Length: 366
Ligand code: SAH
Image (cartoon, rainbow, N blue to C red; front, side, top):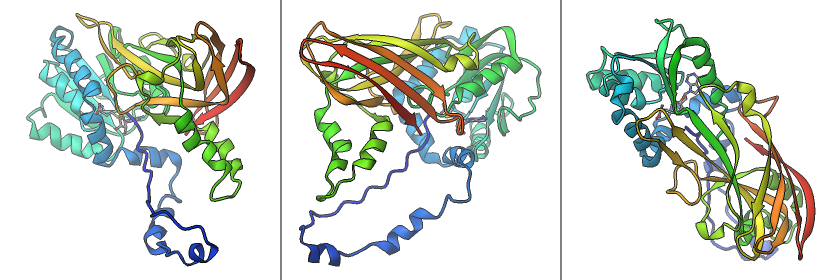
């Protein structure tokens, strides 16, 4: 799962910097005026669920084969888990996971989906001849009336950027506590957040320092904001300077929603002499109840997924020597105003031969 990001890029030929030419440059106001006023009347919750109503975001998720094939393998290669079982698909989207479960022999699958995509899921279920096995329920998990009091299996693809962005995990935990039988299973049942550090001078220049001098003007007030927003992007393996460390492991079968807010210490040891510009977070998920341990990683050393990695730029450039380490803590909390957003605080320090720094930085995923 991942919320749609609808960035609009416009490209212009390089402008000559004379005042006259800048003043006469053509405008595309007509084209742009439609971009601004469409979402004013919507709440952020409306916007969130609306983004899942369009097929584009589902296309992106379905075409993420690391993601979708892993779920398919988990289900098809572990038919013994599904045979004659009642399954609940939390946030069914197009219904793909429900279809996998039905095909693997589930007795019945309840597919809950709150966006308009639920109507498509209903059609898809009929078109594929599973209307006896799959019931699509349109609505929020937290508000739905499930026709049965208990289910044997809960399956969901709830992971957001930085694992916890969008906070759908809470919805899965809610469903687990309300409907899952005592010895029932949650798929996936394990998720972990990891951290490493990278050299990234070029991109930091382009995304952050850019604001210091924009066509000759000081826009560094925006630089401050850009520093606070973690960047979702892919990181090349050769940028990695330190080891990778697990920050937090979550057992989805047992955890409480409070466990998704935490402070975790880290110690990242440099594997070579280099500069560090950013920390990089990513997550792994696993399905430990499978016959053979199955899962996937969204880390920079694994095949890319649509989640990419999450880059947190550091105020300081850290000059680090092989064997030296950056230590610190990362605190992750739900934003109080908008619980789908994530607040991150990083404290880091390096006491090296060439560099001595200690700092606290705040980030907001939104
Ligand atoms: N299971 C599908 C879709 C995953 S995306 C797949 O694997 O392709 C997550 C879906 O959960 C989205 O379609 C979103 O609309 C839905 N969702 C998120 N929160 C929900 C809630 N509280 N109740 C019902 N559906 C929810």
